[in-house]
Length: 288
Image 1 (tube, rainbow, N blue to C red):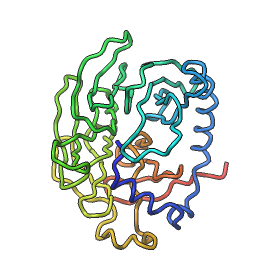
Image 2 (cartoon, helix red, strand yellow):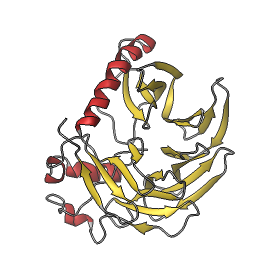
Image 3 (cartoon, helix red, strand yellow):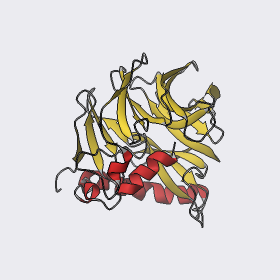
Image 4 (cartoon, helix red, strand yellow):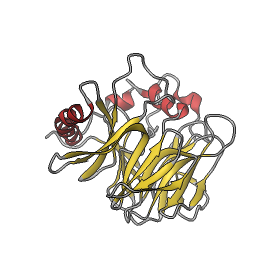
C-alpha cells in the first residue's frame, strides 16, 4: 500500500546526505538486472509490446511480479496506482509464468504453496495451484507479508475511519480470521513478521515522523524503535544524521535472522534494522 504521508517523508530525503552516502549494494543491482533480463521479454510475449513489469513482490528463489498493460502517459498520484496482472518469476532458473492475467490487482504474495491476490477493491483472496480461489478478507489496504511457515500474513488494514490516512496493522490467517495488532492515530502500515513468527515490525506516523515500531503477534503495546525524539520540523533542510528512513514498501523486506530485518529505503539503497535494539545502518555491501 502506498500512502501519502510515508511517501512524502521519503521524497523529502531524496538527494540528501543520508542517501548520497549510501550507494546501492552491488548484489542488489545484479539481482534487479538479472530479473529484468528474464521478465522483460516474457512480459512482452505474454501481454504485448506495451506491457511492462513494474514491481517485484517478495524475496527469495520464487517471487511474483506486477505487470501493467501499458505505462501511463501522465504521472499518477500517489494513491492512484494502476491495476496489475501477476506473473511468477524463479530467480535461479529465470523461468516466468503467468499466474493471474487479469489487470485487476494491487498486490500479490506467495503464501506457502498458494498465491495471495489483493484486488483494487481491497478484497484479498487465496489462489491454489489449480486456479481455485477462496476469500480471505476484505478492507485490506496492502503491504502483504507472509509468515515463514506460510500459514498467515500480516498486512495494512483499512479501518473505516474517515480520511485517507487512517490505517491499522493486522494478521490474517488462512481461515480468513483477521486480528488487529496495531491501530494508533493516523498511519500504521508496512508490517513485516519475523521468521519465528513472534515479532511484527511496522511503520507509524503517530509521532509525526515515519518511524519503525515493534509489537508481537498477540498485539502487545507497540514500542518505537527508530527516530525516537525526532519531530517532523527537524527534517526541514535535510534530516539529522540519526534519522532512519522508512521502507518504501513491505515487498522489499527480508529477514537476515529473527532479530535483523533488511529493507529498501528508496533509490535502491537497503538498510538493516535490529528489531531488539533499534540499531539501523545502510547496507552498502562490498565493491564486487
